[in-house]
Length: 75
Image 1 (spheres, rainbow, N blue to C red):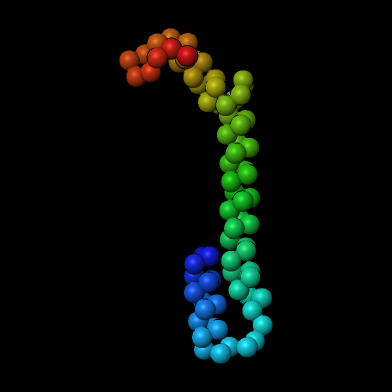
Image 2: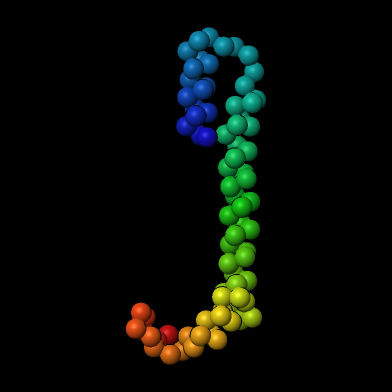
């Protein structure tokens, strides 16, 4: 999105477009804002899953995460 926005801005400048470009700011800024919101939500979910009582923690505990396996050493 960012590269596309920059290319579109360059095209507008090259062709002599002199109108307002608020749509260009939105085209670049809004997707990055959405990306930040999604990453924040995912990080929050991952934190809750990996603490005591979380889904991942309890699944590992039930599987005996304190025992050594052939794929990984004991924690």
